[in-house]
Image (cartoon, rainbow, N blue to C red; front, top):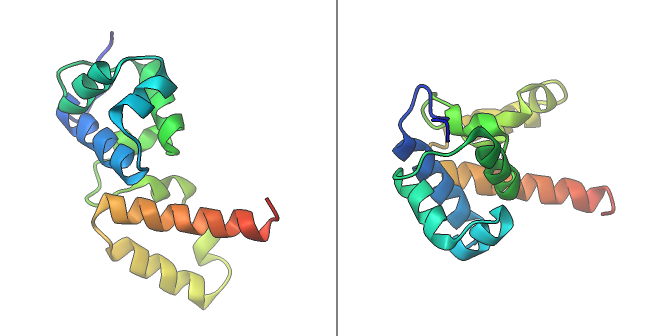
Amino acid sequence: MSDTNKGGSAGEVGLRIKSLRRSAGLSQANLGNALGVTFQQVQKYESGRSKIAAEKLHQIAQALGVDISYFYETKQGAGPSDKTGETALTQVTSEGALFKDSFDRIKDPRARYLLAELARVFCEIEAGR
């Protein structure tokens, strides 16, 4: 397997996986089932004891609802919501700008992820899904 953690250690990527998995309310077994691996293998990914192939990291990102770039972010406090970019929030209203400024001050990646998921769910509700 290739080392997918350029610019960061396997442990840093593993911690991000673990944080997102917990935020999503998934067990290691749940995530393992989604990936076609055992919960023990998920433990190894999360602890940094196993390198993660690029294709597997892509599957993990999909299962956890983030862009694969989330695992490579070096910016302090970067979170899954960073994948959407700034344009949607800053173009339209002062409320959007206020929301973005407030969101950017949240440093806990789990809190950022949960808030982004809440916004996504509201959008789905409004779209009638």
